[in-house]
Amino acid sequence: MSSLVFKLNTLWAQWWSASAASDGIARSTRGALRDSLRSPTSAAPDVARSFDKTLLWVTVALLLWGLVMVYSASIAMPDNPRFARYAHTHFLMRHVFSIGVACLAALLAFQVPLDVWEKWAPWLFVVSLMLLIAVLIPHVGKGVNGARRWIALGVMNFQPSELAKWAVLLYAADYMVRKMDVKERFFRAVLPMAVAVAVVGLLLLAEPDMGAFMVICVIAMGILFLGGVNARMFFLIGIVLVVAFGLMVALSDWRRERIFAYLDPWGEKYALGKGYQLSHSLIAIGRGEIFGVGLGGSVEKLHWLPEAHTDFLLAVIGEEFGLMGVVCVIGLFFWLTRRIMHIGRQAIALDRVFSGLVAQGVGLWMGFQAFINMGVNLGALPTKGLTLPLMSYGGSAILMNLIALAVVLRIDFENRQLMRGGRP
Image 1 (spheres, rainbow, N blue to C red):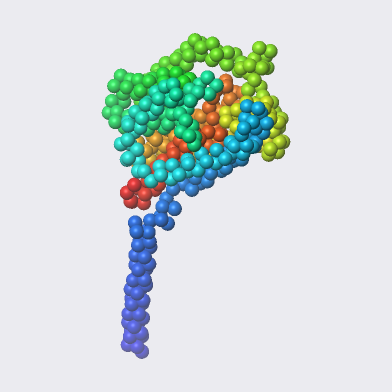
Image 2: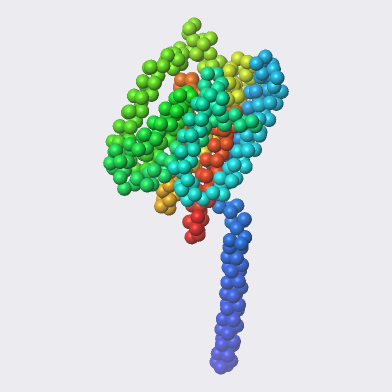
């Protein structure tokens, strides 16, 4: 009996080992199949999983909401004799065209590795300087309302100051990577960058475009701080900039009048002048109350609120969607900025300093410009000619915003490739 039990145990052991071996072969075969599916020859599914799709969809939501609101804010403009030759869909179709061109440019920008952007950052900065000079040349730059900020390209007008924001961002990130070893020495670390930003600032103030200069200063300052510049240097630069902007306002009559109008927009002197836009923006937001008057129901867009489809689009959103609409816009931009900054921190943690500084610079750009535009519309800040990113009407602004966000998605894509043990 014992010999029979022994033989049965031996046969069971042989069957179990054979079964385990075959199961191991099957598992290894399935593993090999999975590895082959992840190989570069079938990279399409891998790419689809390798970037932040939520960031993409939030961007798409802002673009589509902005498209609807641009149409709503501009549909009545042809009733004004100034725009009588335009169709009611004129600004809508131009905005659709701008978004289409920007999406194509963003798709191309996503294909470019960050190493290439780092290599070409100084040259892109030089190109932006040349365009800022070109826009000041008669018959090259196009003037509107006393400002010369655009270059006519036929199908659309290009604003070099938007390219300058992106170029300064890349240049500052590249500069900080190259100057890591001297970041504790003020003149060697900060002075060359300060001179570059000052040159851009002088060209922008000649247009004039003080709003773009403020955004560029914030981008450059933010990258210097995030790059590890000594805190004392950072605050010293901040004090110098505050004094400089204070002098710009004090020495300019029309800028000084704009500040006074902000402080008293309902006063007899400013209600029909410098305070007109702000007062009607506040009226629009007040009419919206909690839930708004409904899409298309805005009264202020009917030739009362100037630039309703550009700088004051948020006021129309507040009138038609109420407090809830404004809160939703603020929430979307807050999430967008927070996510971009997280991608930047992740890149720096992976020892990709240039990529991390670029992503965080884009976060500062989007967040600060949205903050200024919202503050102006809500009466918390003086009137300043800055559009709401991704939403306001404007071809070159949409173009550069989407290119910058495409590069952020590329940074996230390269981060995920590295974390899986691959190469960016």
